Length: 173
Image (cartoon, rainbow, N blue to C red; front, side, top):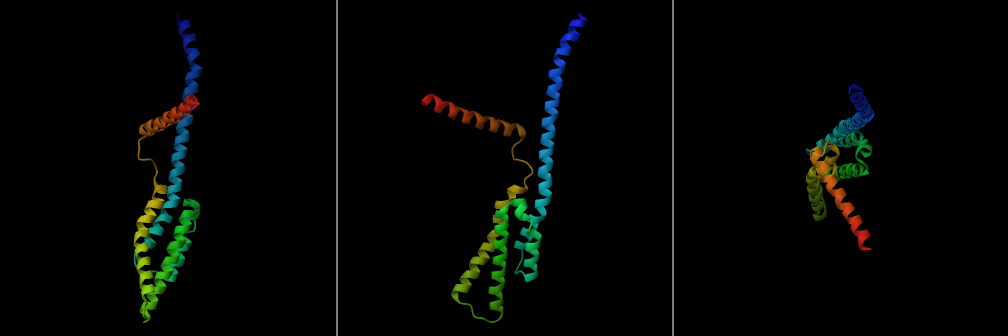
């Protein structure tokens, strides 16, 4: 009787050990992915904060604009070229606003086109803060909004829907 129990348990030993090893590998993979996201966040966040701080406040000096470009140059590699394009646009518009305001301060009488351009730039500048959040805020999220079990359920539902479409195409042909 004891020998039968030992044979029975030894037969399940290898599959149980295999399941434990697979579970451990999956857990390690999850932890590494999480650590990767945290590491990216730690690099991205200061660049994003620099962008947002630059967008707040009044007129920018040439030195502030140059410092802004220096402090955000790695954003291209952390967020993609869209971030670099956005930063360059912010930089260009900051310079243009400064130039137009200097002309006003130096006693140049602005024409309607210059006033319209300044208004358009100021409106863009006001909206740029929220635009930056919309465009690049997702890069700073560490996890999805759904708990793991809900995300799994959503993924399974999507998989079943795709499989139904594939099977329906095959049966209708």
